[in-house]
Image 1 (cartoon, rainbow, N blue to C red):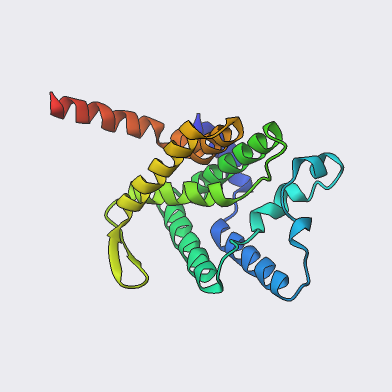
Image 2 (cartoon, rainbow, N blue to C red; image 1 turned 135 degrees about the vertical axis):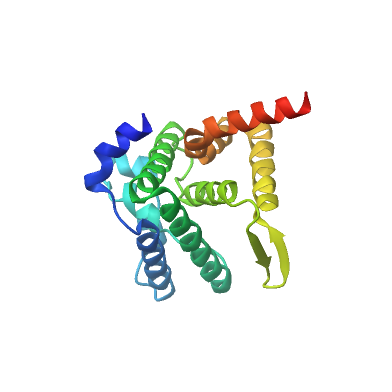
Length: 203
């Protein structure tokens, strides 16, 4: 069904989508620094959307990470690198579909848990997990010094998601499912085949 949907999406696919997300988040971050934009005007709050502020359905995608500027710069660079790599691997249409699936899940969960503010963090997280699954031996240098294979960081991320799912409330459980939803949709079959192969090897 993914291939059928890809054919329908092809005329609307946006090349270099990650670049636009990074540029948008950079612009918004600079606007925050210069007090040109109120952060609360662009976050995704379902109650405000229902009151007519429909722009929040899109502007939250450009909400930057809230951290030290150096960490933000690294995070945006890494988002661009991983997203651009995935687009090169999959092609523009499938990568757009991956992002669109994460977006739809994010919006749906936000409306199911109206007390929770919608965030683009989990969309970025799904890009990271997809990149790590396809490139498990890629080496990331922590603090530019410590080499770590990205598969270990991905396993740590999965462990944190699992802990949050089993210890959190319903809103947290839905957020975790949303966080990994598009990954499972795109890689569920491959994971199942890997599991079957691993089981045969053990036998």
